[in-house]
Length: 202
Image (cartoon, rainbow, N blue to C red; front, side, top):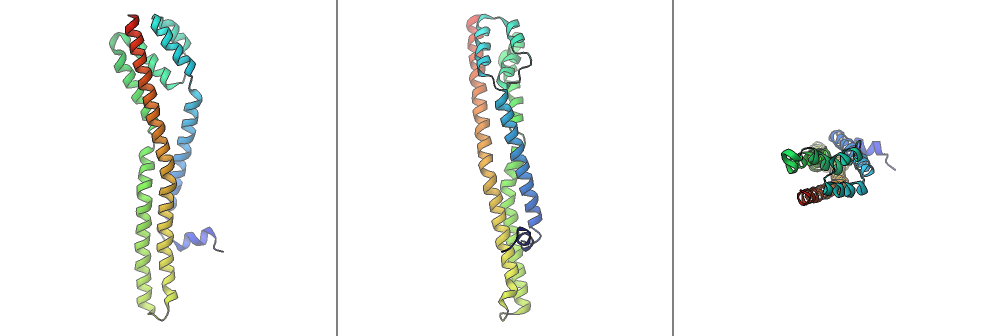
């Protein structure tokens, strides 16, 4: 039975950049998983609803004291809007929401790049493997077909590796994008609710 290292070596030089792609992909996925776990842990939905109720009464000082040290990104957005209500509540919340979304989108372009690059590297390895096979076939002739197996193996291994990295990366990529869209929707919903309660209270 072939070892992983033997298969890696059979894939040729393109396996090294593919290894780099796999390490980068795994690092980004793990970092984003821990980020979203932390984000979920900081959520405080009861306090969000309480902030809206207090805002209806216009008790801004109570909101500031109750939300002090809170790390919920939605509550922080609401508080920023409240603190800048005399200027532009809506613009302040938009700016804070964009900061939160930027943190959520961090490294997503890297993951997207890996999804694109890994299969291309696999195809590149395939081309190199086929070239090697023809060179060996030309040198040894049709009498020794075993001479071309190394090139064919290189072609198949790099293609499979590149596709494997892309396939395994696309699932967390789509999941993270779904989480970002959901978070944006929640922030928009609560921002609209705050605008409504502050306008009704004034």
